[in-house]
Amino acid sequence: MFGRWVKFGKDKTGATIVYHACDLTDFKSTKQVRDSILKSLPPIAGVANGAMVLRDASVVQMTFSQLSNVLRPKVESTLNLDRLFATKRGSLDWFVGFSSIVGTTGNPGQAPYSAGNVLLKTLTRQRRARGLPGSTINIEEVKQDYHKRHLGLLAHTHLGFSR
Ligand SMILES: NC(=O)c1ccc[n+]([C@@H]2O[C@H](COP(=O)([O-])OP(=O)(O)OC[C@H]3O[C@@H](n4cnc5c(N)ncnc54)[C@H](OP(=O)(O)O)[C@@H]3O)[C@@H](O)[C@H]2O)c1
Image (cartoon, rainbow, N blue to C red; front, top):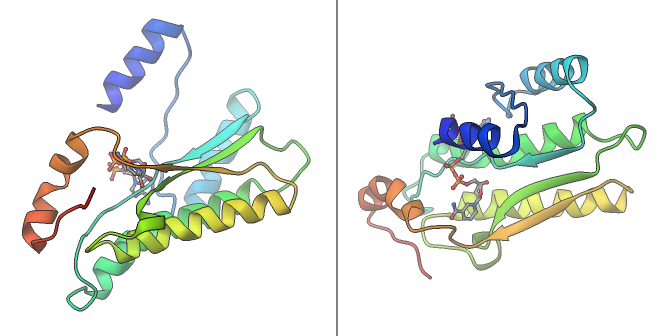
């Protein structure tokens, strides 16, 4: 999927597309990627954060690992990126977090996902209070295969998405 997106970008726009693997929950690794980009590419104009892991389970059955696996990609990625792009000097034009409508409505089996999205939205709003760019998009369902891709998790936990 990602390969197709890169090919599309190159073919249709002629853009140079460079990508790095990075665990956004790891500050050091995220900083290394940022520094490498700063050294080798034009100034960074913006950051878009779409990190997500889903491990649906009801709160009473949820293990700590399930909780942590879902929360960390949302919470720590947001904290790390905020920390790395927190100065006004040479600041970004945009800093966008992909949040979910689930952060507003909640959804059965998705308490940590909902909480992670609330953190993302709150911290992004706080960035603006600090005079920095920050926006979130509260996405509903982009396309049907979102459910299919996570169907195994949903079937396993006997939970479903409400619309
Ligand atoms: N699609 C929708 O309908 C929908 C609806 C509401 C909100 N959203 C939001 O939109 C964003 C993207 O959703 P999607 O449907 O594109 O999800 P996706 O296909 O599951 O993509 C999530 C991405 O996050 C990456 N990721 C997970 N943990 C990470 C980490 N620690 N460091 C770096 N990357 C990490 C995953 O990388 P790996 O593949 O390497 O694990 C994956 O590429 C999410 O933030 C989600 O909350 C999407």
